[in-house]
Length: 85
Ligand SMILES: [Zn+2]
View 1 (spheres, rainbow, N blue to C red):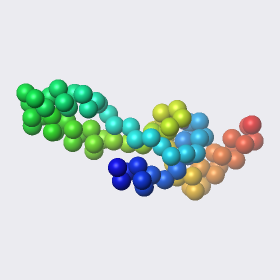
View 2: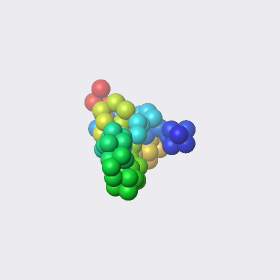
View 3: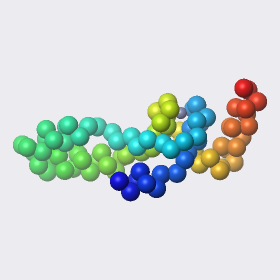
View 4: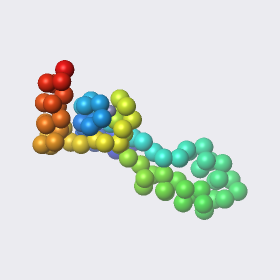
């Protein structure tokens, strides 16, 4: 839950959306639950893999190309985007 509380807004380099990203976790909790019954250890390993490979994705387009909005590249992208309309 703390991850959600401390999320900072990010700029998406794909759609130029600035906002709080969503957390993208690979795999599925369902697989963990299915594995958990007959294979307890692999299920735990799988769950650890999912959590450690978690990353932020743009809430708008799902892109992983997120940069801090205060960075130089973000300002360049935003000004270019404004000129283009
Ligand atoms: Zn996006």
